[in-house]
Structures are given as structure tokens and as C-alpha cells.
Image (tube, rainbow, N blue to C red; front, side, top):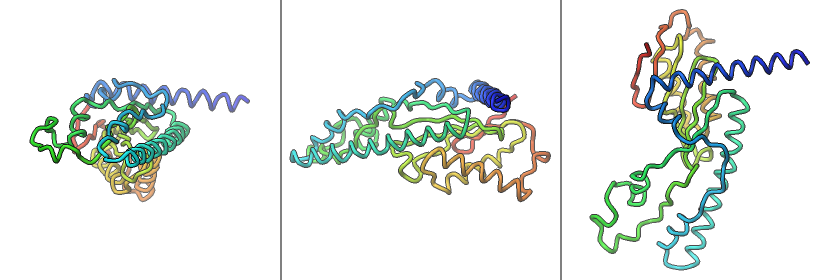
Length: 244
């Protein structure tokens, strides 16, 4: 019983330390701070259907409209069910996980409605083009962002697309931080490994990262004592921020 209690205390201490790391990093990265300022995801709700009903009006017959709504609704429910399992599994394996519902900006929604070309509704379109192929708008919780810190000294942010975790490549690493003895080139190698694997969900992303770290260390390619001691941040596009 004492062993179990000590293990729980150790896990709690590790969790607090890793969560503090995420908090501290938010002061050095504007993009991470923006992610953390979003609404924490506390539950998964049944996706709303009003946008599907609106989009169904682009079809000519009632049968086509009903079929469209039913098919899209079932697709959303399948994604939701898989997402619940995926995030539960992620939190079971890792102690420092924060999940946020991605906020959809008005411009993003408007662009999707107009085919992603940034045009205002009706602008540059004639009447025959007005009825475009239905593209349902993103619903609340469709896209999420996950921030996770692990004992290896790495903190990363992941974007979960609307089809995650059912579609290969539907999750990607948007930010990666290496604390202590990590080099930027090593973080780039880890991010590249994730991209090449075309991961379906955050659990697979973490498996790829830990597998790559273990493989490189076992081969002797990565040796901590030879690495820079300057913490660095690797973001989208290979940007880097040195933390003083």
C-alpha cells in the first residue's frame, strides 16, 4: 500500500512539474500562449446539425437532402466516438495533457463557405455558379489543439483536424519545444518523422516521437553530453526562438 501511495505522489509531482513547464513556456511563445488562451475542452458534445441542414438545400430533391444530412451526421458521430477514445488513451498514457477546442475565426468560416478563395459572397460569381458543392462549416469541437509535456524534456502542441483520428495526416505538430539539452536539428528530425508517418491521432504522434528518440539514443546518434544546453523552440516553418 505504501508503494502504491508513493507511486501516486511521484506521478502527481511529475504532472505538476510538466504542467508548470507548459505554463512557463507560454511566456516565451506568443503562439503557445494563444493556444492556451482558448476554451479548455471539458466534454465532447453531439455535433450540431443546423449547418448540414442549411447545406442540404443546395441539392435539388428532398431525397438527396436527407441522404446528405444522414451521411454527414453519421460521419461526425464516428469521428466523435473515435476522438473520445483517442483523447482518453492519450491522458491515460501521459500525465501532462491539455486539450482545447480550436476557435474558428469569422474569416475562416467565410472562406470555407466561398470555397476558400477569400472572396465575398456573390463576388465574381454568376448565378449559375451560386450553388456550389456543399462544404459543411466546422462545428464547435471539430478541430482541437493538444498541448503535452513529457519527461524527455519535450513539450509540443498538436492540431487535430476535423477528421482526426480516422484519416491519415489529420493531426500535425504545430509547435515543438526542447528544454535543457535539445538541439533544434533534433527537434526538426522528430517533427519530420511525424510528418513522414502521416499519423492519424495524437497517440500515434507521441509513439513516433518516443520511438524515434529511443532509436537515435540506442544507436548513439544522440548523446546528451554533446548537445547544446540552450533551450529552443521549433515552430511551423522551422522558426526558432532562444529563451534567455
